[in-house]
Image (cartoon, rainbow over all chains, first blue to last red):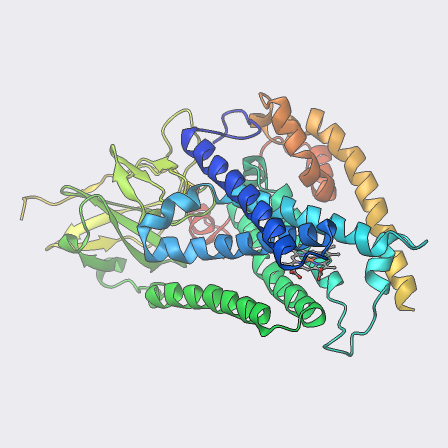
Length: 346
Length: 88
Ligand code: HEM
Ligand code: FES
């Protein structure tokens, strides 16, 4: 964006999103503690809150992990993706309070430093039924902290999108650690198979959605080789829907080939914001619009309209007998290309 | 053995965090705009929000600040590197 950073770029949509999120979480915590007391009148409020906070964070994490593949499978989920960052930060805060509660409740009463006690209090690494599940939660919390702490656009710009994205891919490691934290914790605290079943169902959902979304994109990353005159034959011009793109892997990454009316243009498909898939976006008001957070680029130059400064690499396109041919050599980000024009309406 | 490793690790982490926090305050006030001109106009809310991240990534940011980078790094990737004529 490069427009002078603010704390939070709130707009009406994000405000609604955050209100729904905040109310939902309060409702969940209230219900969890209320129903918990009704079912287990002897339970303490601390225990119920500890569990309510832990489960709300864990549930939210499932939502966060499912939004990506869901939005790829069905565009109606894209609005959820728009403000996923606030889901992530809220999840971290819930998990943080859960962890601090656990530290106070289970590790602050002795004369040992609570953090030391967290790691040395239980060292039965050889037992599944008594495995020290709490350090697993701490490791996950460390990852969630790194992600929440680097969630501002300042970090995106200063780490650059690919590095930022790699860092945020650690969420899958955090999720694996948490499945073990929760699974092993339940093994120790609960006798009912219901909870273990729920954790497994959540895992199946997350894995299943990722596999289905990945399956749908199979083949897309196969590199297309150049043919005659060193140009890559991507598709026929009428295979590209109006205002949308056809995606092909050329020169090591995905290229988005857009058509608007009779003109065809090609840009590198990675949005400069969070490397979202430009090729899944559409042309709005003459500008390629990223499906994730709406950053826009001129289809010919790959430049965001002033005052924004984002730029993506562009490619030369040639039309020949109704086929779309792309020069595989990327031009530097922001290079103006002459758009290819089909001669007559077909 | 395990307990002393834990103690050592936590002490190391503690020192890293204290140095990081001290750095992060200075970075939020002065350093951010030294490595990214867009932070010049940054609000106070923005500066508070980048403190935790600066405390975590302080060695990298310190290096850029001292080196006088002045600009965020350019994004890398097959297309961008290819277009620059360098890289992979
Ligand atoms: C220092 C870090 C952490 C510590 C010390 C910790 C500690 C605990 C403890 C003691 C329990 C058992 C509660 C009980 O059975 O009453 C528990 C359960 C749980 N924790 Fe954590 N935790 C940590 C991090 C996390 C994180 C980051 C999450 C993230 C989502 C999380 C999610 C959960 C969940 C979902 C449960 C199951 C709740 C239940 O037993 O009903 N924990 N944790
Ligand atoms: S990834 Fe955020 S707008 Fe493209």
